[in-house]
Amino acid sequence: CTLDSEVALRVGGDFFFDPQPGDSPVNLVLIAGGVGINPLFSILLHIADLHGYQEGKGNRHRLGTAKLYYSAKTTSELLFKKNILGLMKAFPGKITCCFHVTQQCSQICKELQPHVTGK
Image (cartoon, rainbow, N blue to C red; front, side, top):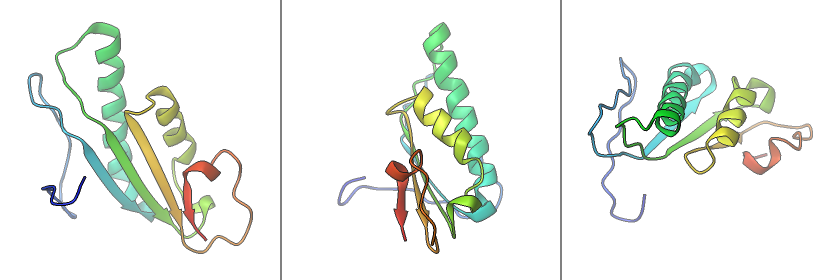
């Protein structure tokens, strides 16, 4: 987003991402904390499936980017972090993530360091 961009937010409740062929591409910003990652991780997997299908078979879905912001107390509490890193590696520039930790006292592993902000 840039200054003065219009954004839509949805908090809680039933939500999903189900783009249809021919829809205009949208860029998603997903924000999760703790175990709230569960439904958003499912959305990321769906996006990865659509990107993989798009690259392999030329499907008609036109996808934008997905950026995940995910916060927890420590890196050990970041659920699915290895899976998320794998999605970022498989779809560079299409799926990205920024992890934020609030109470980390120990060293952050090298694999996560480029993607972690906070203490």
